[in-house]
Length: 427
Image 1 (cartoon, helix red, strand yellow):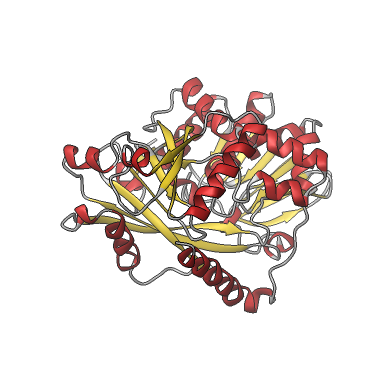
Image 2 (tube, rainbow, N blue to C red):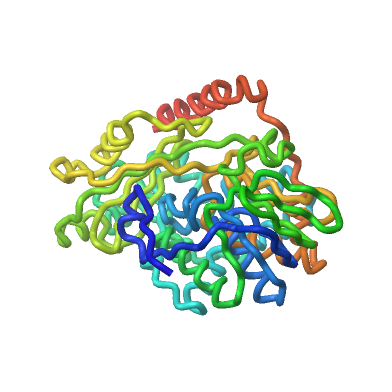
């Protein structure tokens, strides 16, 4: 196999060599066909292979091409809506199970890195940074909430304590999660793909699925071939398009933008983030940032609803970075890119089955690095007939966005504006 480059983004520039995986040609047969080689599909395929299933994975572009290879690289526990929201909206047993699972995704990531020897610059420690008293009160409540589910190592930080981790005067305090952390996200995806192939799984890149024909034997049609399978796992998330209309109706693709500086002097880099933890703030439309292995600052934030590609990413994100770190006024920005994620109205994942043998998980709502790895495990459990944890997610209610496809973008943006205004007024 000959190495093929990944275009765009700092992660593509700094990724390990990626090898050409030929498109599907003709007809193939397998136990499970997984659609999408992002984290959800990779995690599901790896768990299924470990359990003895034969797996073929179809990817429209390349492994990790979507959000899995473009995200902020932060290991953040729980879900996009926290456990207290789930406790109010889900049945008690489902809420209990989801609370127990809220911290499992991070453990799965570390298990994969250790077991399969994946080199992806793993660093431990993540911080939630608060701008005001209301956000600090939320972090205090979050500490108590997570402790009830056994995640009891969270450490509240006052302003001085936070300064030991972040050289910015924007925050009044924060909370350290030592079981958070950060990774090179594309190298994690590529390492998981290599592990799949070591277990004799088959990955076909450049093989967009154009039709799924249900039945006892499912037929999954790609551009130049067809896979016959007993089961299918749909894991396309924001890149699924209208392949499964009933899934597209209750979700909306969105974009988040990231910039990366040139390599910084090591002393400057360490002065910005002395403990090398990753950071996200507590705003509704939050900013997030961390240092790369080669001492660049990776800074992201903001949302474009409907996954529009903004005209000038640097103009949108660099002022945010300089507001946090004016020390970087002279630092050159070398990379800027957008990654799409899938938003649900509840901000909670949508999990379920179509018929009795087509399974899906989607809609991480911007909080997917850990959840997608958990999703792969619970999908594999369900295919084996152990569906209790799968059913906990599947029981969550989900509704279409108000206004349908025509108005969902402006109405959601209006709601986000209100929450952003509330964040500013709370300071």
